[in-house]
Image 1 (cartoon, rainbow, N blue to C red):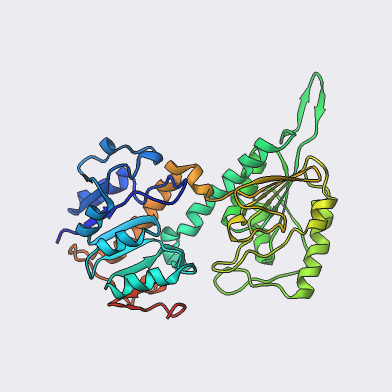
Image 2: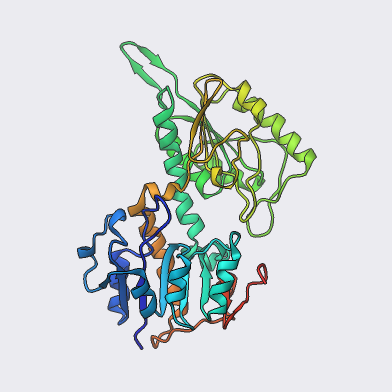
Length: 370
């Protein structure tokens, strides 16, 4: 059986990624499937229409959606795109189920199967499909590049005829995928790096990258590798310990987030006031409220000489590689949906599929959103 796979152009402001790239599309074509691409879908990611080989280029998203058995996107498609799809078709993307859920419920009523990439379970078997991790890799790298760009100092120690410049001191808050990539990137640029995570188990990974772990005595790791919300006592203990390190830092990268919930406030206005003029904070949690209470999403502000940057959608600033990784995540998930006979099947008994399946058979099926 030939499965028709559609790729639509992203419509969110400043979104430059594409859900599939030509090399990955070629693999699907080689397996006997059909790939439809909305014109311009890959242009911003470095893939113009003439780079898609034997894929079919379509003029509109509606044309792609109407013909697709499986529709791929990076972000949730507009309602009109969902409406163009036929009952029984599958939509896969970062569908943001924690926001404006009514639109997804409408798509479910239409008979669409919805798989939300943010909900892929964080288990060993699903690592190759983990979009949150792949895109966080880009975000962690870009955060350090932003910090290096706006900081008034250089990162490495330099010995010159004009004297010796000391290395920048960087503090990375959160040692998940983004934080670890930020540590590695800051180290490559020559900074002295300390890191903090409320999961004590992160120490080994932090130290393996050459950074020092800040010990606050708080451990809040939960099953699945996420961090739970801190108690008031734990938050005060954390703040007291972190404040001492932030006061000496030249650069702070904060990455702490809880999926589907507002970002925890970790850096208070009082902490910023104690930081040195010329210091820089890059807050990767800006889109969900920020780890710094002064952060403004999409802006860089100057607070008493401390620059606070609140970047949004950092993966889109490196759209070629972000799309390449996203495409591989999608390809690996498709391997669970298309069997060895080329038949498309949503196996609700599969742990990975069940974990990210929002809607199927005309109803919302995910336990968190019923």
